[in-house]
Image (cartoon, rainbow, N blue to C red; front, top):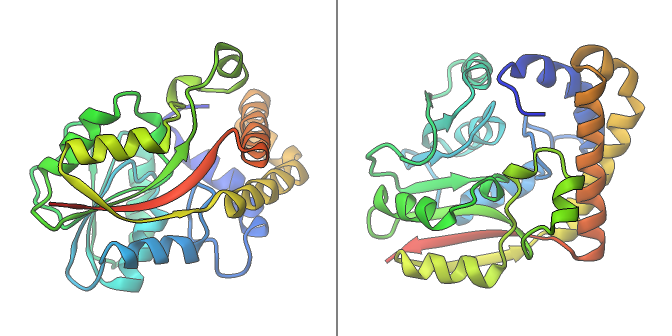
Length: 253
């Protein structure tokens, strides 16, 4: 379902997403995180007034815009999708947010006190190079805040089931901790959020199914089927423990 015309997808899924999240918990995110989880992770990473934040793979930047409005940081969002960034710019309005079209890695020179990577580290097959880049653009004491889809790599059969499987590279938690240490980070906080995200993906799946006729008309039958298929897989994998979700903060030493 990868494409660069993001506006039809944002519009098609908006009503379903609003109905899936509890009041106040949807802030434009394209993920399973609730607003409260986004804010908690941002605060644990030390995001505050005038703190410089680099948000990798920001998409339409719902979490980034929310954190900027709530915490007053200086924000730069990066994404490969020009259409997603145009939506982000339009929605940011008067917020002190900047956006830049980029393939990641490499990263801008920085330095950035906080680097965010929410719900997309699984898209990077080479996580060591990614972590080397985040460490390069951070000063000593800089924080890397991210979420992790934890588990053993997908089998061939699982890759056949998952739409866009070339963006799904699961990693064991122990491997991420080893890579963080190798590039100079110390893990300072971690919290499992598997149950919360399982509940959220179930709610989203129900909402998409309820709105599927309208969604199909806007994005087409193939994209709808891929959307539903991927959410069914995440629901099942989180329910059985095949995949676990974590929120983490690491500090550069």
